[in-house]
Amino acid sequence: MPSVFSRLAPYATPQWLLILLGSLVAYRVLRRLVLARLASSALNRARAAKSLRRTSELQVAEAKMAETQGQRRTQERNIVAMSATQLVQKMSKGELSARLVLHCMLSRLLAAQNEFNVLSESNFQQALDAAEKADAVLKSSGRPIGSLHGLPISVKDSVRIAGLDTTLGLVRYSAQPASDDALIVKLLKAQGASIHCKTNIPQTLLSFECSNPLHGRTLNPYNKNLTCGGSSGGESALLACRGSVLGIGTDIGGSVRIPAHFCGNTALKPTARRVSLQGFRPSVPGQEAIPAVAGPMASCVEDLTLMLRELWVQAAWDADHDLVPLSFNSEEFRRDSKLNVGYYVDDGFLEASPACARAVMTAVEALRKDGHRVTEFRPPLIADVIAIYYALITSDRAQTISRQLEGEVWEDYCKTLITGVRLPPKLKALVSWILKNVVKDEKAALITGATRERSVAELWSLQSARKQLRQQFFEEWKRAGDFDVVLCPVHVLPAVPHHTFKKISFTCSYTLVYNVLDLPAGVLPVTTVDREKDAYTYPARGILAKTARSCYNLEEQHGTPLGVQVVGQPFKDETVLRAMRIIERLVDFKPRTPI
Image (cartoon, rainbow, N blue to C red; front, side, top):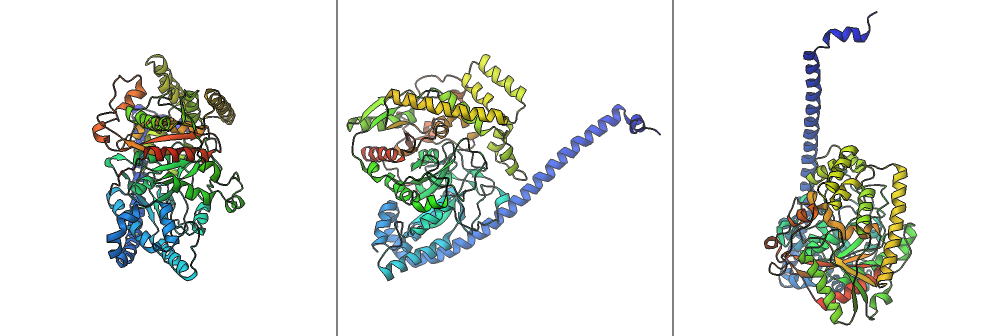
């Protein structure tokens, strides 16, 4: 009986082989087109559903807000200018109604949404009901509900709220409302707060821009041509517009700190395991080598502590056994002793732009003038820490994120990052060798070579190396001055143009280092970009520096906020907050409200 191969032999001609090859190529192209069409159709349906729900919510909010139109016309500007702490005090005493405060916030929120696209989910009806309940309780009992009585709080999209979607900018998670609140939301609500919205994020969270196909792109309120930052970008933009006075973000590489820097907010990345992540949707489930954290975002340092006092409590530790049971140390926060401060403006990997360096020196000079001890610090092992970060965060060869993106319309930066990580190992090794030995740029070679798939044994080895680096870093910290805190830039650049993350993701070196080392780090605004003061006066050295400078445009960035990063020792979060409070008082910088 003839074999299969002998039967096919007559067709094994060049013409038939070309037809077969062409058919395979056509099939792959057709399959991609069909999948793209399906993804686009699903996206359009999800967008339409979101738009319909939001329109309904807006109609309800606008109808309710009409009741206080006269009051808002005379009081809105003063109310939204107050801090969260001041608002709670006035609402708790009955000097302001929770309803009026919420209506003023919603008025600003709607304006911010129209101008800058800050929302992922609206929660207006629940917030309106909560405000009316707060006013009714105070009127009937004479006592506030709790320490956050009537306060509207916004949260990042990845925080679960009962009845709302938690999409991460992905269609696959749309139309799947959560059945329960995240733990920290429960704690805040128990003290009288209401959650009036969820804010926009980048697709999969892993970007310092803020755009996704489902909810669109969020713009910087100080300049629409610039990004508001990410991944807590919508939160930061809304706070800048005073559509919220207190919010929750998350951080795995700078995601509360960079938006705060770009938009003029105050924020804290706490030490890991101090704030619960129970009920959050992670971008890379199971990745724990670089700890993700949740942190507060606000307009002033005092407001950060207002939230943290209600999150570092027994009720949190009873419900989430992964937490370290440390309550808020009010004594440390209120201490008035002088600080021992280190600082740097060049981490040895990529020097900060003149604008961001000047922001650090603004805080340094204010502290020196006030009698604090301030010493220049040369942080050790930064290149090694950065290499560890990229190696750990990409050790699964981006398979987890790729699975979440199946059937989705991808943002450009996702395509660029995942393609880069998934280059064949031999090709990546060759590119890395050329960058190091031909181009003579060891830093670019370092990042290129670090992003590849790792075996379990390699992953364990990296985690061991991370622990050793952390110990070495602290030994140098102690030897150099045993600082209470260290000041440094938040980012290499001020707020950058849209669509640039995919080519300058490496400019996060000043923040991601402290995710690897798991140190508490806060950000507060201290000045703005000045076209007259902040020009480069020397040439760029290396590919990374030249690429970063291509996104530095003083005419475009003039007047945008600049923050300083304040870093502390592990679990010394309150010391970081104390230093931030002192700097805030000394610098006395208040960003203008964009709307």
